Image 1 (spheres, rainbow, N blue to C red):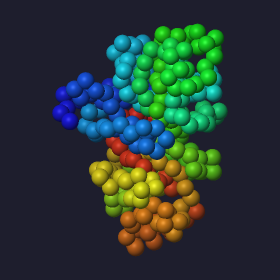
Image 2 (image 1 turned 60 degrees about the horizontal axis):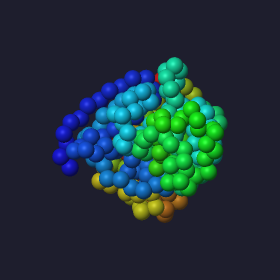
Image 3 (image 1 turned 135 degrees about the vertical axis):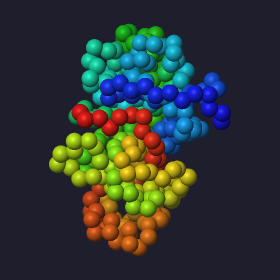
Image 4 (image 1 turned 30 degrees about the vertical axis):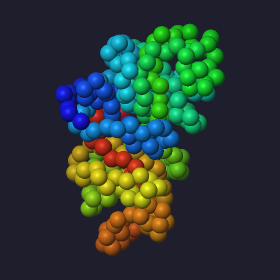
Amino acid sequence: MEIEKSRKYRRGNLSVTGWSARGAMVLALTVVLLAGCGGRREETTVQERRTVTPENVAENTNRYIGQVVTVRGQPIDKIGTDTFTIEDRKFFGNKPVLVVNATGKTFVYPTDGTDIQATGEVRNFVTSEVARQYNLGLDTNAYVKYENQPALIARSLAVSPKPGDLTRDPGRYYGKPLAVTGQVKDVSGTNAFTLSENRLFGGQDLLVLRAKGETAGSTANQPAVQNGESVAVTGVLRPFSVADLQREYNLNLDAATRQRLETRYANKPVLIAEGVYPSAIPDDNR
């Protein structure tokens, strides 16, 4: 794919990540999220990142209609079984963005304010068209204020907690598809590292293992991470057990690394990575 341009914009804590290459807008995160969360796969590349804010999506509809974007932010209002709004926590005056769950799977809406990450196409929302196209039971009266407004038709959805949330209370997140951003620390070879967050109080760094087995998808062709790099990781949280994880995910760990990790992280949470990408979404200090 020939890259025409690569630009970055950053504002606040909620981001929309777009990709530009000869008339197409795609995302690095789209591939793994769609694969890991039950949606269709889409081809992407890693160099074409452009970051804008969700306010831009809500206020500059024509610019983003038809583009595939990733939004990460605070859930504001649950409209219906398959719809909700999200908004940047630092920009209360801006319009929330309507998200429609078109994954074909039930999404458990977080009631505690944990961020949500959604990937999908931006389009003008017409209740009857969306309901018919995605076989959703939408009450027309509930969407009057959103009619002909920009909406994100999500092909993938994931709860997006901070690394410290996962280490402090892992039981809430075990077995769920997650999208986590943080700073890389303690790299152990090509398949193991830890994630931390800025100003982390009372939490331990989160262990991340890149799985090679087909169960979790292959990360073998993704670039190695570096200490201090900000990354986005999608995957599933599991209790750390070398025997179980080796059997299920065919981990490629040498004996010394395996012993060191088992001593330090036995029975603690580990994020089995389905995808690891440079993060265009800030791991903020909220």
